[in-house]
Amino acid sequence: MAEEEFDNKSVKDTMEIIINAGDARAFIANALDDIGDFNYISAKENIKKADEKLVIAHRLQTKKLQEEAEGEEVKYSVLFTHAQDTLMTIMSEYNFAKHLITVFEKRDQKTR
Image (tube, rainbow, N blue to C red; front, side, top):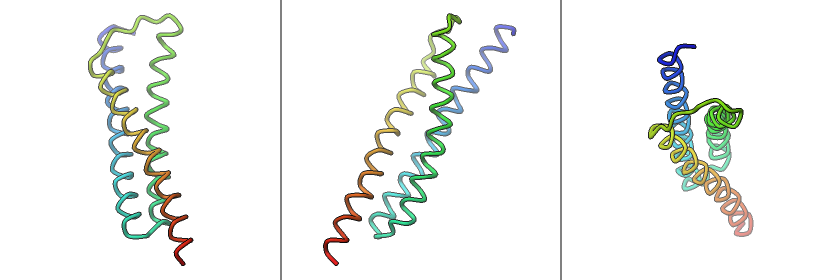
C-alpha cells in the first residue's frame, strides 16, 4: 500500500472514531434527557444505541493500536490523539449515564 494511500486510510479510520464517539455522545445526551423525564425505557434504548457506536469506535482504535503492537510503523498523529481523548471522555460519560439510569430507577421504585 502506498504511503499516501495508507495515510488517507489512517485519517479516515481516525475520523470514524471521532464520528462514532460523537454519535454516542448525542445518544447519551438523549438518555440523560429521558432520565429527567422519568422515561427509563427510552433512556435504556438511547444507552444501547450509544453503546453500539462506542463499540465501533473502540474497535477502530484497537485495530490501530494492534497494528503498532505488531511492529507496523505508526506515525504520531494529533488527530488520532484527539480521537482517543474524545472516545475515552465519551466512554466515561456513557458509564456515568448508564449508572444514573440504575440509580434513578431504584430511587423511583422506593418512592412508590
